[in-house]
Length: 379
Image (cartoon, rainbow, N blue to C red; front, side, top):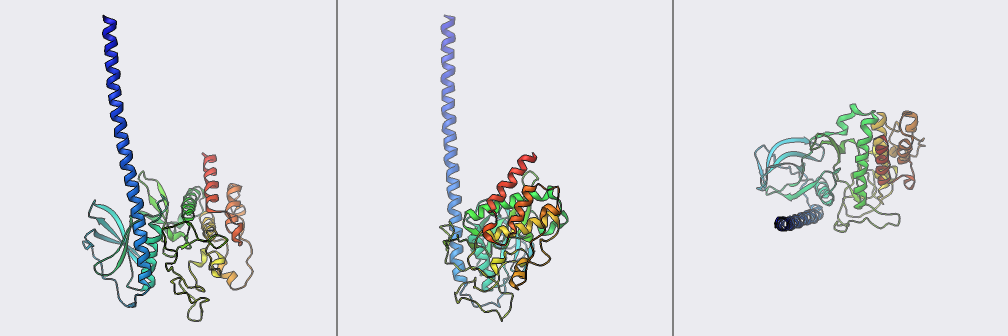
């Protein structure tokens, strides 16, 4: 009887375990379903932001009041019944960034507005939202909302990134142990951007933020997509972002003054024959070639890497300017000469980024993979 009693007890225990396992499995399935729903909502939200931004880009071309000014924003002001303004974070040539609190969940975010109602500045802001809203990557600043306020100013809402730009951390330049992990993250973010069919076109220290991560670590984040473009492959076909309006106007600024004459009468915000980007970091081919390829960003990454690793620019004058003026550009001094202790594979990798022929440069993915291998070897 004792054996029978224990057997029944054992069976009851197994039955209870089966019931608990079934309940646990059902709960896990429920959570997985909810997680999938959240992911689908996030994807749908990004598409909605991109679509709305695309319409804004096209509409802003017709704005004819360049003299108007954006209303002053003050702490405590509520924007569209959604965001409470806290403070001004910073201001640049094209816009101002504020810290805000989202009223729905009290999350601190960044709100960016353009200076005045200049069509170029507004279109750049809308373009930035259109581009960045399609991207979800830890090494890129996330765009969460875009709209026009009741006061008539366009704004985009981004994750609030606490940290400093690389431009503000030049005192760390020349330290490979610090620079290489940063460059690896930049390359990883750039590769994700290129996989989405986008070329940044203005990668430079001021457009990379070193943010404070959740555990106190530093995370590199690429930002400012205001002059980004859909990439084209060697056959001229465009990149692989189906929801982005490829006919929407993009931006090019012309610093050469009134003597510069466009090669095209295309009514877009990226007029042929004008200059876009920062000459010191710009790939030489962007001075004359309208077709935009990811290899242009890789050149910028090479210049950035050279500066982070050596404190110096690869050339005394920007390569784009020297070649545009018809002068001969000598090859940059190899990183292996500047830094004999640097891994030869890394030195060669970044030397190749600076090659003048776009097709001879590695891809951003190549750079990311090579730096990941070096990190694993060092570990």
